[in-house]
Length: 97
Image (tube, rainbow, N blue to C red):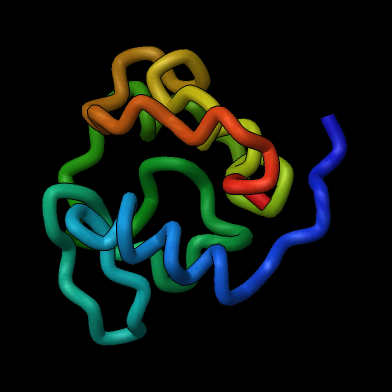
């Protein structure tokens, strides 16, 4: 599926409501329940320094980018079976854009 055009303001609101309780996005941000997502693009799964990833994340071996994150956020447990991320996903394509 192609990625629809995103909206920065709506995306920030979705991140705050659905993601920020477990993730940070600042360069100096600490890991929470989930890893800090700063610098995610171009990084392989399970490679954020200092975060205890599952073997499933480490071994997935994909490189994060716009398309991989769009696909992952639909259903994280299906995309990476064995991940400890409990988030059910964002079903609407526009919310993942």
